[in-house]
Length: 169
Image 1: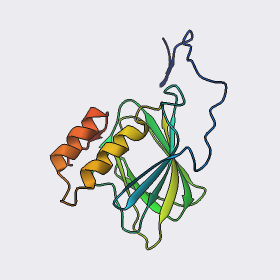
Image 2: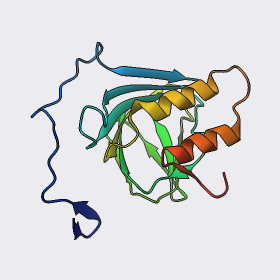
Image 3: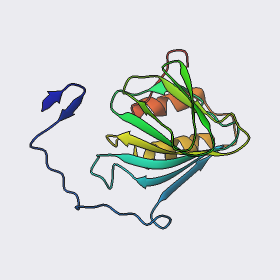
Image 4: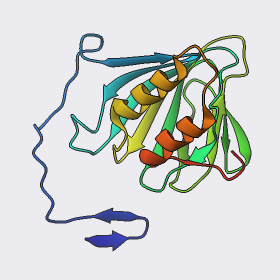
């Protein structure tokens, strides 16, 4: 393993991947819906050998991430596609509109909301890919019971996948 600043890579690592990974836009995507949040996975750790997770996230009006968090195992890049979402990153609020992007380093507390009257959609890229759709499917199951969400179960699921609730959460 070689350390180059904040990037680490193994010069001898080989992954069993096809030269390209292609997914049909609708037929092969994983759609996950829960509450005011919809995700459409385009690529995941499972079809990229753990290299990246890429998904579209649509936030309905007045939607928000219920628990601000951070993670130590991956970085996030968020690219605005439509509407405006508000990201709170390390205590600073940033509005993200179409064509704008934010990069969230490992270890930085963040959360998001859609404070507008219109849906907001963004492209989310997690590098390396460690979550896949599995985490979001589990969270959707917790939120789909019809009862108010159990914060303890949500936090336990987050921790199991490497998302650490912010100390004030």
